Image 1 (cartoon, rainbow, N blue to C red):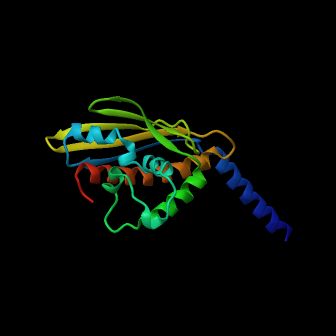
Image 2 (cartoon, helix red, strand yellow):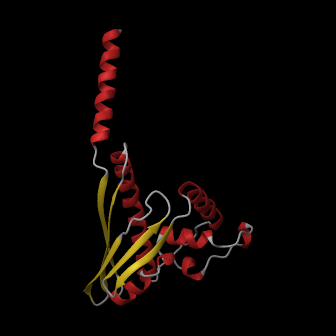
Length: 188
């Protein structure tokens, strides 16, 4: 019994040491090809409330409370929503996310038309992050868009936070880029 306990404690110690040794920083890049001219993509990308989940959450958070049957999204958000999406369920989900993450907003920090936008995230666990979007012309109506971000967590379990954040950001950025593509290409 004593030997089993020693082995278990040794395994736990190794796992804890491995977790503490993980790097607390991550870098991520996610891209997409959009069938729209570069200036049009830039104009829409500079309005994160139209395509970015954090931007849309901030817009929804500022809407007055009303019964689900009477809810009306702003036009720029209706353009982004896939057909058949239930607004009530979406609003409930957004409210749960906002309670979990706090008041998170994304704003344009700087831009250089038509090829670069730097955003700034305010609030939540990624407060201060500045994702950068590059918007490059590939052909007349083909534009390459990439979101690059990096973040460094501090503290004891910073490596675990970095791994978790990278996985979540990868999925969120892929969704955001799909939303941007849908809005730029005029699809539902």
